[in-house]
Amino acid sequence: MERLRERYAENTRQSLLDTGRQLFTEREYASVSAEELVRAAGLTRGALYHHFNGKPGLFEAVFEELERQATARITAAIAPLPDPRERADRAVDEFLDICMDHAYRHIVLQQGPIALGWQRWRELDQLHLGGLVLDIVRAALDAGRLRPHPAELIAGAFYGALTELSLTIAETDDRARTRTQAASLVRDLLAGLAADSHPPSA
Image 1: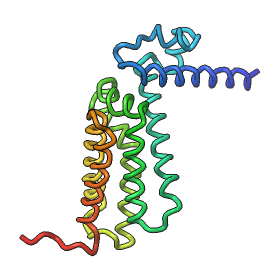
Image 2 (image 1 turned 60 degrees about the vertical axis):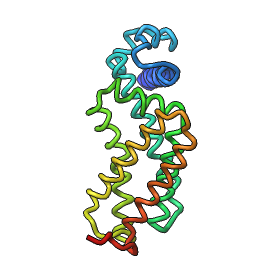
Image 3 (image 1 turned 90 degrees about the vertical axis):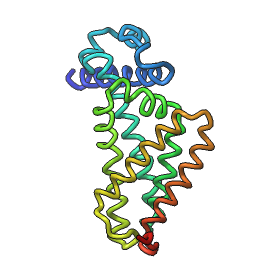
């Protein structure tokens, strides 16, 4: 009986997550009500509050699920590449491709700052993607592929740049063109930090 209850609870939770992801992808956060969420999932308000403490908690859970999937996708894409610089380039490409995905773009980039608040949005985004950026930077520094600036500062600079570029891609009318331009820009930024590049003259 305990296993059956656990399975039912997990199925209920997943049903709410799936429903939340669908509705939050299709609509703005403010226009989706708790009542609509539970009706679409075929569940009760009690189930929503038990598992997620209401609509805000469900949105945050959907948000984090998308961020975990994004991190896993980038990690898998760079895993076969032995060269740290190639890993960095591939990670950027994969991340920018993820930003083109409608669910990620709408929930994480467009509705996330509104629903969660800027501080919480940034905290969760850094929790999932910030560490990955830092790991990539440290590997490139250890291999002598980047000029020896502090890893945290380099990671912070690129995390900030990628964050702003992702938001720009989400809001622009020509996303494909902006995504291509963003990739080119980040490659130039990386090239400027490459160990074999020359610092600008004072």
